[in-house]
Length: 313
Image (cartoon, rainbow, N blue to C red; front, side):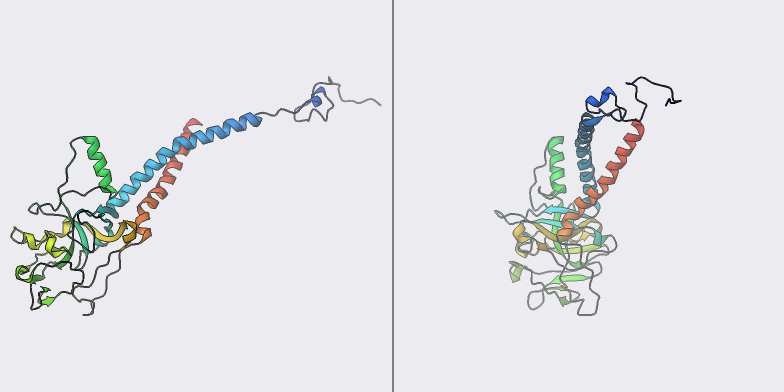
């Protein structure tokens, strides 16, 4: 029986048909589809190359964002002197502590008695340590980076002390038991290490001006603090605006890892003053700058890739 469909050569296969189903000569070998294994290899290699190219950018963005977080939120500091022994180690021959300084509490408030603060000292203050500043740009950049992550000695202008009195309070020494008093009330200072002899301990009274602080080291006999600068134009006080942040955590060495509290040295809690919230501390505070930097870097990198693809398309 004849068919009305026009004939065609046996080796011509309509588009979309499997040549083997049509019984053509093509059924003698495998079907070669566009792309195939070689194309997949090229695509995988391109993806791998793209990831390798993007990785340095991702790390750079994460690092920059981490530095921004450290600038405004937390910052690591190296303790180079023994003025805060034994709360913070910095004694000659020992491993100096690295502390994490929390800047957030002073966004909305001011330092209070008992806080351990890092601050820029007044020009009249003598450095507690001698730091040899580098003479070239590369070394200066490396030193800046080391200070940013707390592995290099701080600037000669950076100090760490404990707040003893704030603006409007009157501080002096000593009462009948040789204790420092604020507004006539003796302080509870269990952290004091190697106090100065009683006969040389006296100072004041000094009324702290508004916006300034009276600070002292825990190692009283080896601390160039407010008492040591009582004769300068500000009576040894430091400006609240010069405070960098509150020392919240010892992050190195690991055997001293732990939080740094702010004891109620003036007995305000017993007088019914509400306790302040504790600063962010612990491992979360250490990892926060880097985690936030990475979280911020991922969407920025993804945006760059989409933008590049749209341009190439």
